[in-house]
Length: 304
Image (cartoon, rainbow, N blue to C red; front, side, top):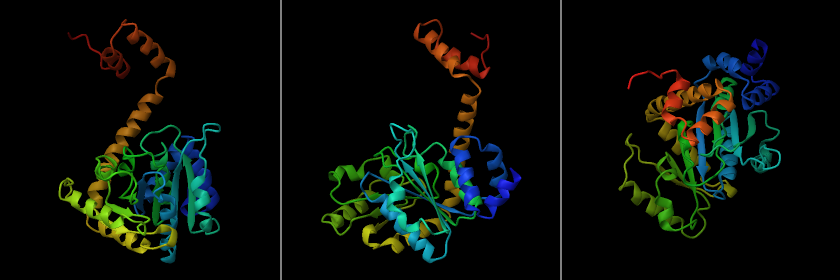
């Protein structure tokens, strides 16, 4: 384990790939414990939005812009789970072929494995791996599941929501959930009709709803397919990162992450058959769900 850790800290691509496989199979806790003291330097950028908005193309161009600055980049591309193999379909890798031979870019596709919210279950641990491996920026592209895809805000230091003109009615662009997590809005395909109207409506919505931290999202127009506006989008992310709100965001991220880790560990303590039997008892009204939970947690008392 120490040898693998040292190879990862030195940026060994094979060691990173092996560790990523261990993380996805949920067998990397000892390794992650060794790597964590070496993290905290990478900027994690989340990219989310509706399917077809151009997230993969934008992420690809963003990585290219960062490479021009000689930044080491990791891209975690969350793909839909294959109904046949259970793995990722790897569509994002097809769109990022220009980086396949670049040792400064590491691309990892991950399957959602049925997880809602647009992220794979092991995505947070994967950012720890790439951070320890010396990546300057980690781009996490979600699968694109719709307006409830807000889990990325619990992982990324800065969240980009990618929108396109004429993608649904005007009200769609102003709905809660997905729209409220953006630190930066990227209006992609802005060469299409309706881009100016969408930007005007977005900015108008900022006067109606205010975030608790006081941040007003920045809006950037891009045409990712032609690499237009990419540097401006990166500058907007850095503007948000320079505000000092990132520290507050990291505290919130780890509060949510620790709760999730505790939930996972508690579930691992029990055989699945325990829940199946308990469910049968509750469904048959032999007991109540509140008593079941108290007994599982060991907090059941005889008090009335």
